[in-house]
Image 1: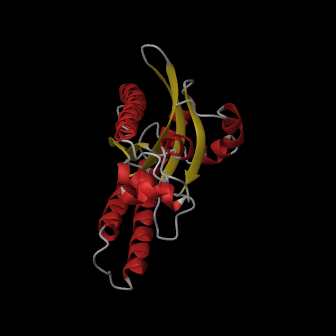
Image 2 (image 1 turned 180 degrees about the vertical axis):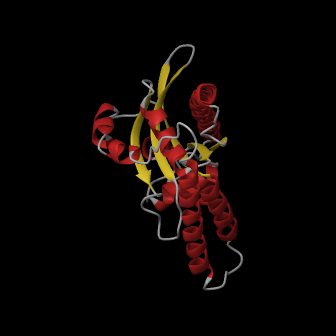
Length: 245
């Protein structure tokens, strides 16, 4: 709080101002939570439709979160930005987050295709950390979408970050996060190398599972979808020039 106060040069010294900002912050979080509900409901409908047609579920789990206030403040600081509500809205696209796990790699890209085909959900950006893993070994598909949310007297366009990955990728990411989450101890120097090696093993396992999945009747390989959507980034950036939160 002291750092936030310093960043904003005492602009919120008045207790009344603090109360107003707190209320506005709560209202903003409600808008982000509403956007999550809209997207999650859409996925649940698509999941039910796919299962009815193909007797298989391409989505294993759907979870969501709203970024914690301290995480929001830390991210703004890392970007060299003052901790303000305006910066929170205009500079951060991952305050509302949804995580989807899938049985197979192809299902990850199938979910991406489902998003592409929704007329009221616009894809703004795609980062493919499956085909291009991070140095740490992290693999996942990150998609920023903008969704329209209707309220009683207005409509808002809200960004939501969707992380889509296989169950195996999610296992690795969850354990890696637990190992690096606490700052009060030092891990052995070789841990990062070991984690990268495990990530590679998991990726090979996912590929083997994908090969087995091709024997499922009607199984379709959607792994080329990411390349097609990458070409659409400029288009969506043009369509969604501003986010009206």
